[in-house]
Image 1: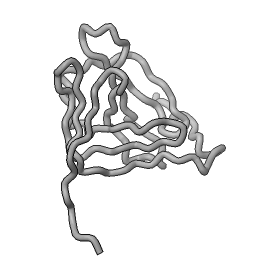
Image 2: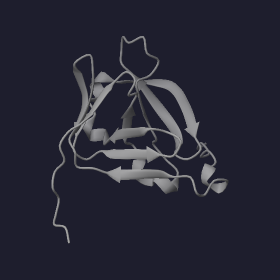
Image 3: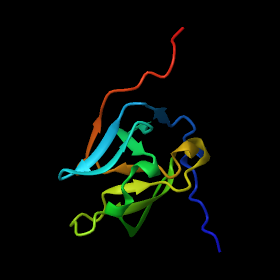
Image 4: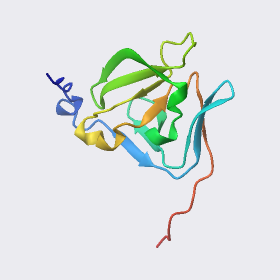
Length: 133
């Protein structure tokens, strides 16, 4: 039996903004000097009523350092989130992802974000990708 997707909040608030900004900046995520992720193919998520959050492509994350936890939450504008912790950590979770996000933010599928109050996320230099008119 498949799980039913959570209802979308866009039905009641079609003007709500969750902007997925593709960036070529090299971004890193680290905790206590241990690198959890690095990529120049991240999404910078600018969500109304929230701060900016960096989401890393799954292949950029060192999954050997993360352990899935049973926690799942629902964001009415992104969908159901799954969480990870660091083995041996006293933190219940440090990272999350939306495996099957709502269609409005479908590109977010599988990308992983880190709790920026515990994990240091840095944004480095960008890479030039083409000409300007």
